[in-house]
Image 1 (cartoon, one colour):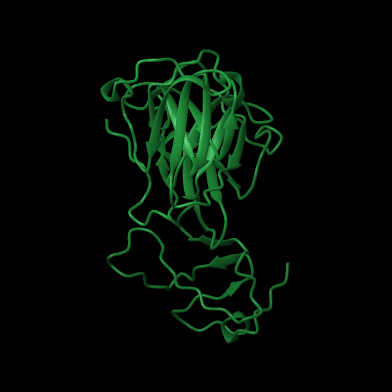
Image 2 (cartoon, helix red, strand yellow; image 1 turned 90 degrees about the vertical axis):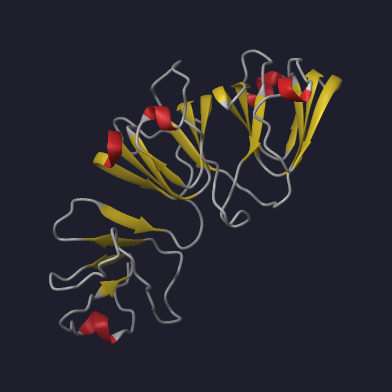
Length: 262
């Protein structure tokens, strides 16, 4: 990895400044941070030759944590213990098995750029967990399902539309009664008069996550644009979905991602 930015700071360090190279910046001991900053905040200016897709890591002398920033694309940090403690591992793309990446256990998750979906089993199989940009300090912050306490795979979710439309059908192959939802989150199908099972789904735009029970509880099922002719195609053991919401992305939704109500 090249270290020359054609930047004077990279060649001669000045008091009160920080020198940097591609991929990493280390703070100098005498660098003064603004009083209003709890975390590290930097505006990084580099020459036109700099590849903005590089991951820039910031590190302080008194902290074992690093604060990674992805300027483009997806980025997720896995911590092996709750509350962002212990060893951590950074993902910027799909990972079919975190054990092979050296992660012993997923205790907490920090999503810096998302959204993402995690899977109970390797190769993106089993129970699903959807993560949008934000902090997930412990297991119950991303699911209330206790069928498993294991996450072995992750992949980014592509959100390429500002608009959302989904149609859920009672029977397989898009038959029977249906409920159509456009640009809205529905915490209870029963409140909208739909009390049937959900055996097939057609997503016309946007990305969605369905839940087994009302109030966004129970197993989660990710619905990306496309058709799901049977409940097995979206990973459900039984055709039961009773709430659904849009998956948010900061590119389209400047007010932020979904925040569950405790």
